[in-house]
Image 1 (cartoon, rainbow, N blue to C red):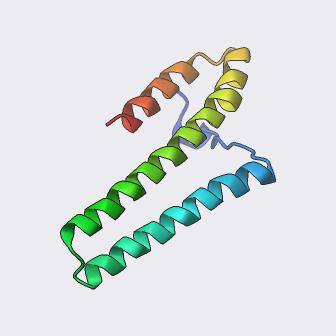
Image 2: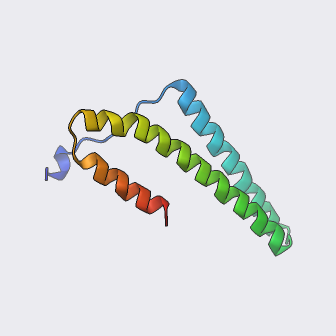
Length: 100
């Protein structure tokens, strides 16, 4: 394993359209979280807060699915073609984290 100062930071170059799509999803999530906070601050009924929380969780899952799809179609395919063996392990690790 290389020493810490030798490691290169991995990055993913995204098109402006891809960035816009992902940022739009995140902006909607931010709005949902602010809405949930307002519900708590205004002593809203628990079920109303939980309903909004479930909607935010679903939106976050949709964001993760979209990002994972793009990761597999781009980064993973590229790395496998380049013979980078650790990519599948990295993919399985992140899928495990997403499934918790």
